[in-house]
Every structure is written in C-alpha cells, then in structure tokens.
Length: 400
Ligand SMILES: Cc1ncc(COP(=O)(O)O)c(C=O)c1O
Image (tube, rainbow, N blue to C red; front, side, top):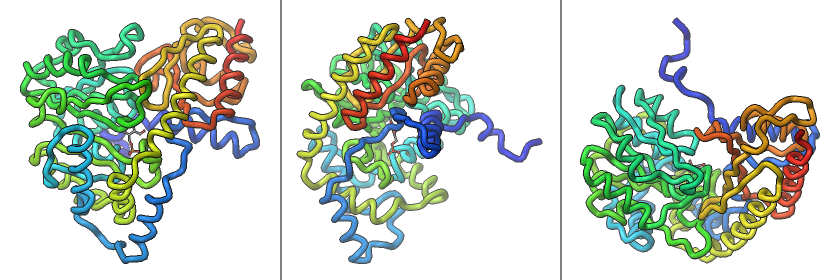
C-alpha cells in the first residue's frame, strides 16, 4: 500500500499551471520565451481596491473573520447579484472562499458521493473533472463541437442525464474556448433541466464581465427561475477585477448547500484573507468603469490573435464571444514534421514543438478534454501577442 491516498492518486496536477511554470523556468534560464498559458489579466489591480486593502490593514482588520465571509462582503455580493443579474439572495445564501476554485471545490466535495455523475461539457476548465474525481464522483464529458461554437447542445445534455446525475457544470464565457451562451442557448439547456428535478446546476460565471461585441451575459438562475432552488451561481473578483493573487471567489445558492460548504471550509482553510475580503468589498461596490476600458483592449487583442492565427497554415481559429482565450484547431498540422525532425501526432506534440522551436508556450487541447486544439491566453501586452502570433505563423509555415 502506497503512502499517498487513493483519492489523490485519482487526480492530475493542473496542466495549465504546469505549463506556465515550465515557461517561467525556461525564461529564468535565459531562453526567449513568450508565455501564453496563464489565465490571468496582465492589468494591475485598480488603485481604489489596493487602497481599500491598505486601509483594512491600517485599521486592524487583520483578525479571523466569519468562516465564509464578512457581512459587508456578503451584502456587496447580494447587491451585485441584484444589480447585475436580477437575482435575489440573502447573505445566508452566500459563501465566500479563497478564490473561485475553493468555492467550486467546496460545493463538489460537500455534495458528491461515490458513484454520482457530474456532467462536464468539453472543452472544460482543467480543474472540474479532477475535483469531481477527488470527491469520488464520475465526470461525464459531453463535447461541444467546433461547428456549434464549442457549446453544449440540449439534445446531447438530455442524453447524458442518468438517475445518477447530480450536477451539470456550466461555464460561460468558457475557459478554454471563450464561448458564451446567449439567453436563447441557455434557455434550451434549462428547458431540459426543468424536466430533471434531481440535477443541480453549478454555473461558473467567473468571466461574466469579459464579453465583447455587445454580447449580453445571462446566468441559468436568471434565465429559468424554476432552477433557482438547485443552482449555485459562482463568481469571483479574480478575472474581471484583475485580482488573481488576492484569492476571493464567491457563490450563492440554497442555504442548505451554503451551510454545508461553510462546514467544509471551517475544517480546511477557515476564512479567506480578511484584507482581501475588504478589497473585494471595494471592488464590487466601487467604480466599475475600468472593466469597459480593459474590455476594449481585450477585444482588440482577440481580433488581432484570431486574424493572425487564421493566417497560419494548418490552423483554424473561431472568434469567441468572451473571456481572454482563443481555442484554435491545429488539425491541419497533425501528421506534419517539425524542424526538430519530430512528427506532430497530436496537440500535445504541437505545443511541445512550438515551445522548442519558437519559444511560445500554449496549452494543448487534450488538457481541456478536446483535441486537436490548443489554448492561447491573450491577456498579454499587444506587441508581445503580435510577436507570438508571428512565431506561430513561422512555426506552422516551417512544418513539412
Ligand atoms: C472557469 C474558471 N473558473 C474558476 C476559476 C478559479 O478562479 P480563482 O482564481 O478565483 O480561484 C478559473 C481560473 O482560472 C477559471 O478559469
């Protein structure tokens, strides 16, 4: 019998973190590497948010807080849901965790029993299947095809639901594809869910504010009020407010679930950082206009990257509605030979050879459950992106 637990042996380390670390290591060794693997905005946290944190430190807000969030932050979250999503939640229906990841982790660990199934549309954010497996559950993958803009179709959802289905995880806009569901597309899915009262919905709205071209964001509990009593609407300040390092995420849903999540958190990390919670109060209650100006930059970068990748031979890159990722297909490069003499058999080979030949770090689609694709994060300075896309074009052009 090994020392490491069976539950830990069921899961893999995060592929995106591994590739970002590899890119950083190569850079530290002096290699000319452009890292496009990390999922965080390059913009700094706005000053008013930093000041709120400094004020919190100076005024002694440096002690333990209630396990799942200070009342001021829970109120700011309730106000946000009302203001932006038309959703009414009481503070007792809100849970604050150390990042969105902990909120998801708590929700799944608190509810999934061995044998339970969780529907995970692919391509998916890397952590969903592993958290489900850690809890002893079975992720059930349903592919959102390229021709459907990487989105789950109602008929495929219907087919995937069994008596063992506990949750459907929906993530719009999506990491890794950037795809976002319109109200009508969400309604088609919620119509299926209404017929299956035992299936809960975990809506990961982390990229809510990062949508382009007048796309109107909606979330399942808003689209179908009948699902309100079995939906956890999850969000956080990491991406929209450029606060990835502060580690604040939150979720709102039925009290019974929120209490169970707090019980788990009380025996693991306890409260999220008191200082970061006060910063998040300011993020949610303070000025929001910087989000629109950041989005203008993100949209320009998205258009640049999509256009340049579509000019690379063998690549095909759809235009996503949101987030800061593109998910091009590299089908046209499979079977070709790289300058190193190695044959590109799959998307993992593609990103390995790209890093070796041109020093561009991207993440292979297999890590997100859908091949042959790769993910590029365009949350990087525009001139760096331009350079990276030129390198990708050169790499593809040199394949034989
Ligand atoms: C889809 C999605 N959900 C949740 C998270 C977790 O966010 P946080 O950094 O707040 O834990 C991420 C971060 O990459 C994400 O991409």
